[in-house]
Image 1 (cartoon, rainbow, N blue to C red):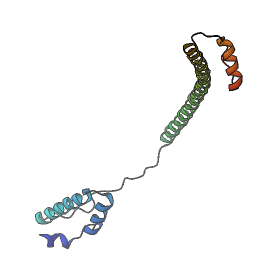
Image 2 (cartoon, rainbow, N blue to C red):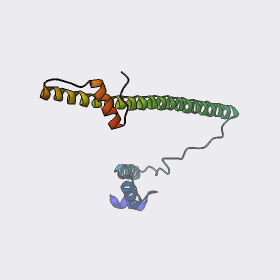
Image 3 (cartoon, one colour):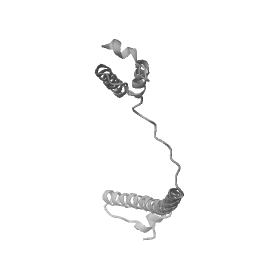
Image 4 (tube, rainbow, N blue to C red):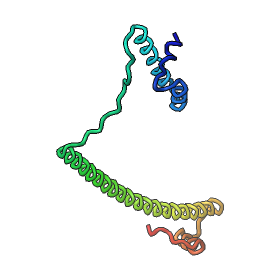
Length: 159
């Protein structure tokens, strides 16, 4: 049986098929080759002539002027659509950058407020501790806050 297939070698050799299968990491070329060999063998046994070419490359036809115009119009619409999408994306990016800057400014402001409030808490905790140890508070918290403000070098909130 195999000797009959060897008499008329196909367009591709088994070596070409194996290389193709290894390159594509698939057994599909081997399966196709095996099926082609089976078809070829059955045709030879039944006395039918060999199929010369099962697959022909697609023919390239010249486009008509109408088809060319249609294709150019489609390309132009595609270019316009792509440009519109780029502009829209750029605008969205600018809006997001503006929001990001606003949020960063807000975060800096809030962090500054946190520092001021922590300093106030420290002053009041110190005064509370002095009151708890001494029994009475002789100093004015506002004076103490101004003194801490001068030593720390950072202004307190105006609230």
